[in-house]
Amino acid sequence: MTKEERLERKRREIEELATGWGKLLAQQVCPEGVGLDMDLFMMEEIAVTASKALVRGTIETLTGSQAETLGTEHPCPSCGQSCVLEQRGRSIQVRGGSAELNEPVAYCSTCRRDFFPSASRVED
Ligand SMILES: [Zn+2]
Image (tube, rainbow, N blue to C red):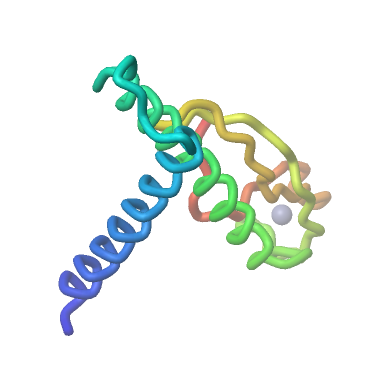
């Protein structure tokens, strides 16, 4: 299986999973069924609100997991000295709105600078 085929398979899995969540969401939002007063625009608003929250939750979870993978120390990219990693919370804008990240950051006392070892770091 090529890389493209694996990516396509993963994309289909994600879509199937999210389609199931959409069905659950519809049941949760309208447990008594859908009244005739709800139009397609309102249905779409429910789905868009949920999808934006899904983007934020996914980004926060994946970046948090990535941050944990980095451990508690990281070598300075300039001098190589091992520095203690700390988590610094910050808000970033993603397609679903504002996401709260715990971003790993370290201070190198030799170089007297902060550095951010996360590969997925968003530039300021
Ligand atoms: Zn350094």
